[in-house]
Amino acid sequence: MTTQSAQSDPIDPQKVYEERRERNLADQKELEATDGRFAAARGFVFLVALVLGWYSLFDGSLSPAWLFAPAGTFVVLIIAHSRSIKRLQRKKRAVACYEQGLNRLDDRWQGQGVTGQRYRDPDHPCSSDLDLFGEASLFELVCGARTRLGEDTLASWFSTGTDAKSVLQRQKSIAELRENIDFHESLALLDADVHDDLDQNQLQQWVAAAARPVSLWRRVSACVLGLLAVLSIVAWGAGYGLSPLLIVVLLEIIFFATMLKEIRQNVSEADAAGSGLAILSQVLELIEQQRFSTPLLSHLSGTLQTEGHPPSWQILRIRNMIQTLNNCLQNQFFGPIAFLLGVPVHAVHRIEIWRETIGPHIPEWLDAVGQIEALSSLARYSFEHPDDPFPEVIDESQGPVYLAEELGHPLIETSKCIRNEIRIDSQQRLIMISGSNMSGKSTLLRTVGINAVLALCGAPVRARSLRISPFVVGTAMRVNDSLQHGASLFYSVISRIKSLVERSGQSPPLLFLLDEILQGTNSHDRRVGAEGIIRQLVDSNAVGFVTTHDLALTDIVDSFDGLATNIHFEDHLINGTMYFDYRIRSGVVQKSNALELMRMIGLNVGEDNSVGENKSSP
Image: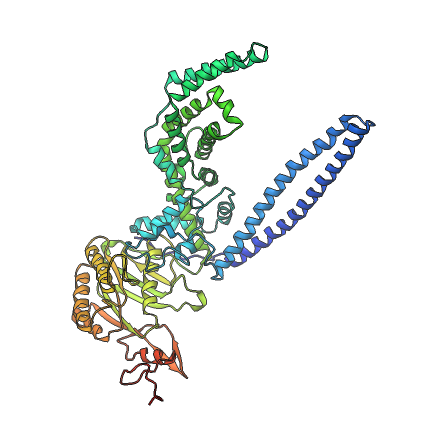
């Protein structure tokens, strides 16, 4: 069983980010001034070189040796300027990094992070309804990974919960990483390219296939032909003509023709495997420099401790080998030389030997990177939300529990977030929520669901406290009809509910969140159908929440022998304006605001249910 842990004397993230932004901004301005001085110095040296060149090459009054001084100085300036530019670019990235961090603290983060759109799955039991992925999603708020591995791992943790023991291990690791700001900064400022086309998972798929080293006779043949090519070039230079070289070239064409298909296949496979290796090598090197103390992080770091060269070196090495192979076939300057020397044969062989010897270690290396990046993302989120505690996750054997104090939605601005108390367990398995339009029913369901996702992936939650057991969260909220599949709204609703009913009864238990259950059918069928569905879920050890506008459905609670309860939200119409406090109250709502809302937007609605009637018409 995990124990709830609160952050003691947390560091103020606002202050930390502002201080670091200002420090990097000051360094940026200083480096910009240095950049200007370098540019001026290079220009001055260039002008000096022109003057000396005139007097030495045209006027003849100076020795050409005078040109070595400005030339050497110019080269030194170029090298120093290049290093200064790299430092300047890093400072600019640092300023942008902390500005984005401050935007997250100010609830202005939407559109600035990785959306995780690729992970949206309409068949997932809850991800679409809870805004786990996509624009302005939980993934965009939390994710700070630099590789596809970290993104995949974090998305997997959001999509699939884990057991209480694993949650506790992640909580400890997140607590260790939480205030390691230097690590988060170094990870964010790595300068390798990162975009959606780079996928390090392809490396794992590549090493899973059997290696195909080049046969010995082909390697020996390539060496012999390469040596003959060198000798024939020397002979040509010595005046023996082109015939020896042309003969060798012909032999090499015949030789390479016998393995051209194999080389092309190796190039294609290696190119795919080489996707994103630059950033992977940098992330590995950064992780290798860390020393961790918590069990999970120590274990993950330990998988990267190998004899000989570290994983980051090995990944950089295979990247360079793949680049060399590509240059052999694509570089117009290096390609002919590589052809004459037989380099493609040796490049393919080296790559295949690497796949054979290093390949078996790749899966655990990539898994370690993915998990550490996911933990780092959650740690950064924890640091930026110091008031959000870790939940207490109890073992599944103790029965279903969701007990929250001051529970709020993490994607709603802090100043606008209204918090409520929630209790559901073996003694109260169903909560029926009634209330008027826009009063907060759907938001409550999403609040319950998204905090369960956070809790069961090891993250802090938006609450004063939360005690929770492992669940599978299942929702039926944003269900739409489908013209493409010829499915009506009602059919889509019951199909989604059917999948939840089929999931109930398994381990861990289902936490169901049903919004406006069985919308799209008549009141009688809704009443009978809803009671049957809810009873199947509850009898299968599932627990959950149901919202409804149909007050007749609230009577279902009476048939559950104390295992269910009614709560509601209210609204208040004051001087023609609708007000909501989004506070939970016991019992069934006593009024509706539908007619008031229709009148407020200009629809003529009377007690006789007439709509749009023009009273002044004859």
